Amino acid sequence: MTQTGPVLIAGDIAFPRWQRTRSLIFLLVLTVGMAQSFPAPVGSGRGLVVLVSMIVGGAAWAGTALLRRSPRVVLVCVTLCAAAGLAASGAGQGLGPSYLLVAAVVAVNTMPFPAAAAVAAAQAAGLAIVLGATHAGAEAILLWTAGQLLLMLVALVRRQRDERTEQTRLLAAETQLAKQEQARSEALAERARVAREIHDVLAHSLSALSVQLETAAALLERERPADAAVIVDRAGRLARDGLTETRRAVSALRGDPLPLPELVAELAEGYRTDLSAEATVTVRGEPRAVSPETGLALYRSAQEALTNVRKHAPGSAVSVVLDYADGEIRLTVANNGSHGPALTGLSSGYGLTGLRERAELAGGSMAAAPDGDGWRVDVRMPG
Image (cartoon, rainbow, N blue to C red):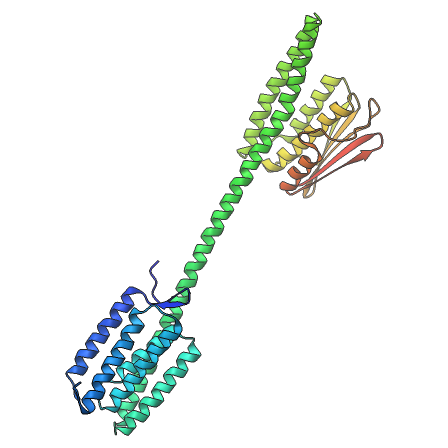
């Protein structure tokens, strides 16, 4: 975006190139006009005063346009330009007050408004005194004073417009930066989500598959091929289940809803089949569609809880309750521990921390604690 007003850079004041060019053109026109008017700039009398004023005022004028200096240097240039205008006006040069107009405009563009107003007021008072001393008419005094006031107002309006434009540009840049940071954060969160799902699938399927294959190898070494065949068949089923889990995770990552009651029922059926143990599923309320993240968090929680029962209390009765209450969905998985040792913790690779993090990322909560002879996992999710 092209700057339209003075720019403050590391404490220095610089004007846009087109403004500097315009200012120098005005200076050139004024210099030519003063050289051709009375009193002309010569080496004696009033002409000498005009000549010195043109040199000092022109140098100061050019300095405000070309120099990139501190505000103090700009103030010096403004002061010299105003002094040159007063001197030229005192010498009777009709175009001399033009230096005062430039000084007032530069003051408005570079100084706080109270300071610029004070400078302009001092210039206007000085010009009125000088013109009055040279017996200039009231019309001339009023004309130059009104012209100075008008240019100051125009410069002030332009400065405020430029400041608003700059603020808008900065706000747009900050907004764009915030959007980029948000996109980066979302990308990192999505990457972590994908990694978490891949980890969960591998942890539940490949680890179980490895155990089954090791068991089959041990049975073959003991020359028990029939038993090994059963284990290999079970390993094949675990591999197929792993592929199904992978497809389900990819589907959830794409935003497809999960049939939560059916999936929980499948987990319970697998527990009953594999361990010949009791596993009940109770669905309360009217099942409803939930976000893929919420559904996947509840499904993984049920899966992990049942996996821990298999590991720590195999054969114990398990109850799973899926409660569709108003504003939330609650999943409770509990075992009574009567057919095995009490469940004293959750399996490594996911565990309490993983369950809690998944629930919190989806806006819910998770609690796990002993329940009689067994263990209870309680997950609450908004939905």
